[in-house]
Structure formats: C-alpha cells, structure tokens
Image (cartoon, rainbow, N blue to C red; front, top):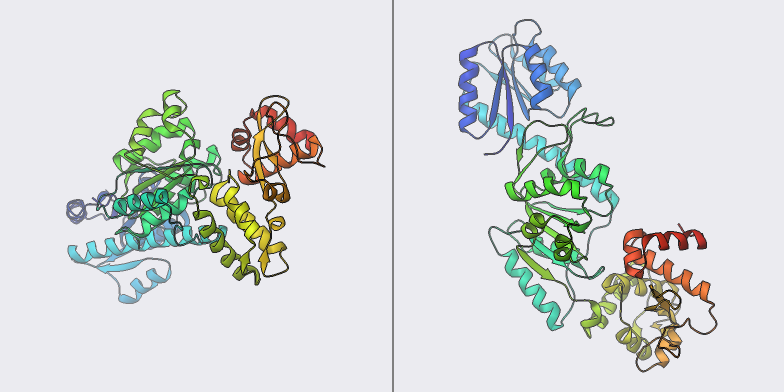
Amino acid sequence: MNGSTVLIVDDERTLARAIKAFLTESGYEAEVAGDAEQALRLLETMRPDVVFSDVRLPGMNGIDLLRKIREFDPAIPVVIMTAHGTIEGAVEAVKLGAFDYLKKPVDLEELKLLADRAREHSQLRQELSYYRRRDAARESPLAGVIGDSPAIRAVLDQARQIAGLDETPPVLITGETGTGKGLVARTIHGASPRATRPFIEVNCTALPATLMEAELFGHERGAFTDAKESRMGLFEAADGGFLFLDEVGDVELSLQGKLLKAVEDSTIRRVGGVRDRRIDVRILAATNRDLGRDAQGEQFRRDLYFRLAVIILHLPPLRTRGSDVLLLAQHYLSRFNAKYGKQVRQFDPRARDLLLAYPWPGNVRELSHVIERAVLWSRGPTLDPEHLSLTTPGPEPDTGERLAEPVSAADMAGSTSGAAPVGKAGTALPPPGMDLERWERAMIEQALRDCDGNQTRTAQRLGISRDTLRYRLKKFGLS
C-alpha cells in the first residue's frame, strides 16, 4: 500500500468505478465524483494526491475545474481525460497547469503509470522545498566520528551493526550534551542501505510546542490561520529514509501519544486532515536525559520510551576518552585553519597537557568552540595555554546550588591535577583577581553558550532552579 489517494471525476459511472477498482487493487485509495461541484466538496475532505478529470462534465467543465483546483492547491497534480476535442485542447489544459492528459478509451495500465508519476512528482517537489529550507538554515554536518579509544570504538562497532540491518528498529542514542549523538545518527544513516534516501533531523528543543505537531506531521490547507496551502511534515519528508529526533525528551507530553502512533503503526495524520497516511521511516532518537527515570516519574510516556529504546547506544563523555581529545583537537585545528585562512601548525606541550587535564563538561562541542576561538586569536604557528581560555566546573559557595567556576589557563597549566583553587572546606573559589559577581556572571554566560541559550538546560547544567536562573539573568542584564 502506498497510502496515496486519487480522485476520479467522470459522469460515466461504469468507467469511473472500473478505474477506482483497478487503482484500489494497485494500492491507492480512490474516490469517485460525478461532477465538478461534488469533486470540489471532496477536495476539502479527502485532500487527494492526484486528480483524474474528464473534460466534459455536467455543469462546470473539466478545464474550469482544473482552474479551481489550481486555486485551491497548486501542488495537486491534475490529469485531464478526454475523448472529445483535439490534441490542441489537451495541450491548452497542460498550459493551464494540468500535469498531463489521457485519451479515452482509457488504458488502465497507462492510467496507473500516470498516477505513479504524478505522485512521485508531487513528493519530490515537496521534498525539494523542504531540503532548500533546511540547507538555507544550517551548515552541512561533519562527515565522520573521530576517535580511537576503546569506548568510542565499541560505539562505532554497534552503530555499524545496526546500520547493516535490513529493518532497522528504533534506536535511542544517549549521552551528555555535546558528545556527538547527532554525528553517530548520521553515521548509522550513511552506512545503511538507505544512505541515498533522506536523513531528516528534528531539534525537539528548538521547535515550540505550538508548532511541533504541524512540523512533524504536516498540515492541510486551512488547518490554522497561516495554513494557506497543504504541506507535508518531516515524517513524510523522511519517507524511505531516517528521521532523527534530537533531544526527544523535550517533546511535550500532549504530543507524545501521536508520536507513539507514528513510530508504532507507521502512519501519520496531518493537522486538519481526516485520513491516515502510511510512511516508511526508520526512527533514531537522542537525549541527554535519563528517560527511563523520567518515564517512572511520569514526565515521559513509558510506552513511548520502551518503543524508542529497542536499541540503546550510549556515548561516553569526552573526559573518559583519553587521547581522543588530542585527535579531535588536531582535527578542529585543521578545520578552522582552512575556514579562517590561518597557519597554526601545532600545540605547545603545555597546551596539550592542559587539553588532557581539562574535564570537558561541554564535551566535543565545547572542544570545538575552544579550538575555534584559539585559532581566531592566535598570531603565530603554535597554540599556547593562554589561547585556550578554559574554565572548569565547581559548586557555588553560598547556596549549595552548583555553578561552573572559571580557572585561568595559567592556573590550570601550573597545577598537576588540573583542579580549581579550593577554600578550607573544599569549596571551589573564584580565581585570584576576579570578584564573586564577575565569576558568577562568567559561569552563567558560559553555561548559556554551551546550552545554545536554552534556559531549562542551562539551569540543569548549573544545578539551580529555573527561577533562580531567571533572577540571575535579570540581575546581570543577560538575555
């Protein structure tokens, strides 16, 4: 079953029923209208993927119906059927926007080929539109996972095994923020038999709850105020390929039931739609949260969790990957040299020691930002410790709520353990020369950057409540 619908508009009932029966056997859902007025009413409710219309109809003729359909939704392909008039008339219909024309008596096999071609043309058009919007919004991702530690090799081996499966079950990729969960998802797609099919990434944190349903499942024309035309959702855009739900734990509870149905039954229904559409999509999801614990606390649906977690891949934090830090640092050094036209060739030995000693709370993403900043500020062929401007986490001294504490590169490089300065009770203190307010502001700014401005994740990262974070943002004039 391809799940596509066809509307047949013809007052010859016997022919129309024969076409409907043939297309139904071929996997289509088909409906018949005896005149243009009935066709326009059906257009509102069934939203067909293809329309076959006779030219001569009682009342409004097929050409006028074509114009009405074009006004309603120009993306719907219309095939004109005619046993009357001339080829010139059919060509005129094509000029007016008809997808193609078909001569009567109708050859059913030819009709099915036209239906298939019209459906594929419509899907390609919508996919192209989506990819253009997506590519305009963000850069292309990196091509591969870098690392030689046993922990990352084990993850890559598991990813390759998953990619080799003909029927990939849902995969849940877990790990701290910045560990490269999206990169592993793209690696699975690239090594799979579906590598040439779409890979659609959905940032569940970035999408507002009010828009997420329409983005995921699509919408019909008129479903809400700004829905001036029908549009496929990201599930449909990923048909035949992979859909990657990044930070799936942030999906609203009210939407999780519909998401479960899509994953479990391989069907979706557009916002404002009246029928289900079948999809062929492999699901990858990622989270930095403990979804098992959230499911027990009813903060995440348990049935959805168990459906997504058929296979779990856990990405280790960068601080446990040993010399992978230096491999990644060298990779980013080459990358940002090329991007900014720099000629930085190496790391000073003290900088290498600092990279290995630092705990990397922001993981690979933080390392990338640190190297990019260092390359930008460097003036010679070698990166020194002061170019790195690293910070390290520590508890907030006053309230017991955790904050991250800045430590200068010189302090880190001069310490054998890489630890922050501590007070008598073991509480982390600001570095010498920095007052408490500057230290606190710097930590909040760093956490906001690491969490891409998301206040909920920033508060979790700092170990404080969201209200406390909002108070401090207002206090320091931060947005």
